[in-house]
Amino acid sequence: MLHGLGMQGRDWLPFVLPFARRFQFFLPDLRGAGNSGKVRFNQDDVFHNHMEDMEDLVRYFGIEQCYLVGYSLGATTSLHWQAFGDFSPVTRYLHVDQAPCIANGDDWAHGLFGKQQSHFFSQLHDLLALLETAPEQGEVADLAVGLRERVLHGVVSILAQLSGSNRLKSAFDASTRWAGLWARLLPVSNVADLRAYLKAYLHIAHDYRPTARDFPVPATVLTGAQSPLYPAEGQAEFARLAGADHVVFPRSGHVPLVSQPVEFTRALGRFLNAE
Image (spheres, rainbow, N blue to C red):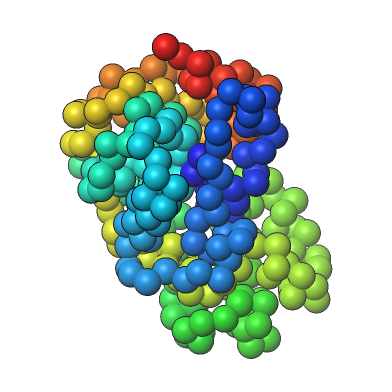
């Protein structure tokens, strides 16, 4: 079970516990998250780094066959694994709210942020430029006063737009004196990790559509119909390319685990118990 950005493996627990008697679950913390929080990236491509870590995990535990579930960042890691690694242990795949191509182009308008990509990418570039002036290592909370607040303002502004809630930005603007606390609440709080993810999403434009056409195992795509990050049309196209079952949660955004938790748990059960 590969979690999304800003999450950790234990976040899957409420959803896997109903099936724990029949299945053994592996809930890894990706680099920079949870108990892997102090493990930094050692290459530019964060997706390739995560993929290699998962291959190490499979070898370490001697896993010969497994089902794979990937949500958001975990789904990109899964697609990267299928495209560039040894995907042979995987016998079934559940793909949760992620596009097969992050960057928009002449033949693709369903990448990260959809039609608003240029607007949001401009903000991500501005945030990356700020971080380039920061020390190579360390936490956002430990940045110099002034720089820390500017970085936080950029991050919170982006998160507020993604969530569709201006209350988040208003709360930050009203309590900037608590910037140290805000910095510790960020989904990614390490400067090097934040910089690495921004560079990956802005400059490493993997397109997994070609390899999706030869997807080697039965797959299911779960889509939040209201997802602000990845348009449902692009996820439907991925399901078509991969010959996957496609399940749409009509009331969900990018996090169906929160928006429709009961429906998500049922969908996970159907995936696990499929013949």
